[in-house]
Length: 330
Image 1 (cartoon, rainbow, N blue to C red):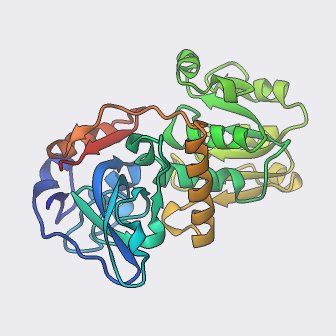
Image 2: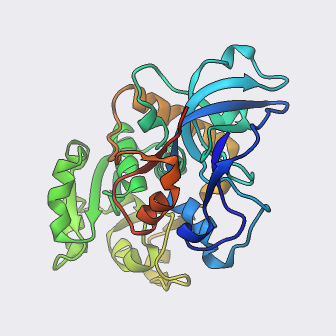
C-alpha cells in the first residue's frame, strides 16, 4: 500500500517519507479501512516534531488519527456485515504505530464509526480529534440545556465544533475571536446562527462584553488558551462553573486562585488520547447524528495528495483555519 511514515522526529520536509508498505491485516476485534481521506491535526504534527520532549513511540510511525473510508476486511469476532460500510475513523494512531496516512489502516472495531448516507467523507475525516475534544469540553459535566457556554477561539477546529454542539444541546453560546478583524469571518463561517454573541479579545473590555450578554455569568467555558484567558474567565464565571481547557500558551500558567475558589470553579483539563472509552463512544454517536442532521459546518480546505504530506503538516503548524486533509489514492 502507498503510505506516509517517519522513523525519526523533526521538520516535516526532512522526516516524512512516502512509499510502499505491506498491507495491514486485521486481528481479533479489528477492522481494516480502505481510506479515502486522512485528517491532519495539530496533535499529529506535534508528535512528529517531538513537542515537549516526546520521543518516538515506535520505530516507524504512520501518522494521523482521523480519516474516512470503507471497511474492506474484518478480524475474528467482528460482524462480517461491516465490510463495504462507509466509516469515519478516530484514534487510529493513538498508542498505535500506524494511522490513516496510508491506503489502509487497521483499528479496533469501535473506532470505525458508520458514516450516514449524505455525510461527505470530507466531514467524516474531520470529526475525530477535534470533534471528540469539543464534545468532551461541552458535555463532560452534564447537559447544557438552558446554560450559557463561552467558547474561546470559535473559528478554530475544536472551537467551531464546540459552539455548534453546545447550541444543538440547548445552550446559549458566546464565542470569542482573538482580533476584531476576525469578527467578519464569523459571519462568513456558517457559525453566526449558533452564536448569541461574539466578542473580540483585543477589544477595550472583553470581560464586560461577555458580562453584557451573560449578566449572571457563564456556566461552561471551552478554553483554547488557558494561560492567556484565565483572568477573563475568572471575571465572567457563574458560581459553580466549569472551565474545560484543551490548550495553553504558557506551560505553567498562573491563575487567580482565590476568586476562582470563591466561585467554586471546576477546572477540567482535556487530553484527547486518554478520554474514557464510554465518553469517546458517546461523542462519536452525537457527532455522527449531528453530521447526519446537517448541524455541523466545518471549514475544510481542498485535500492535498498523499505525496504532499509535508506541505499538509506545514499548513497545520502555520495555524491555518481550514481543516487540512490528504486525499488517499485508490
